[in-house]
Image (tube, rainbow, N blue to C red):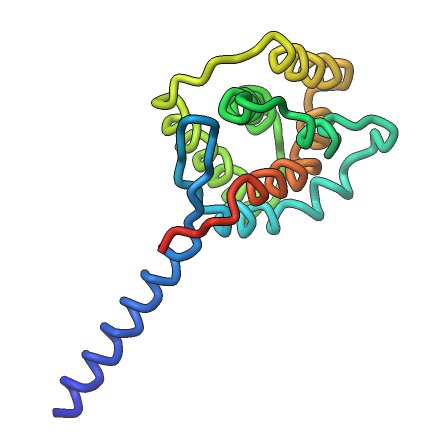
Length: 176
């Protein structure tokens, strides 16, 4: 009887843990499309690397991702903007970001993999990009290439908080 109660209790704890994880998933409204994103996981991985990335940023006067840039996304361009920002991070930033700490390496890999997964889901949305949105992302790339590649990647990772805040603000609705 005691073993059965213990087994049921453990099963209930596992179920509650799984439900808690599901509750953390957000549905982001991206124009005419929606994508499920686990923002709590992104935050967890980012918290591991944030202080290292910010401390290692010696280019204090340069800003790649200004908060106003994220707030000024034109109506109907959220999907495209997010797709292009994720592409920038996956293709240019994470591949050039280096840490000597194994835990930070795992966290940056996990972030990169999460971004790849979100990109895959967004690809199904068939976003269309306006010329102004493309110009905005082009200016981000232009600032990035002005810096030495490893320093640019370090800066972009340090500024990832801006992207995560923007993502969290896209849709306050949490999936049950």
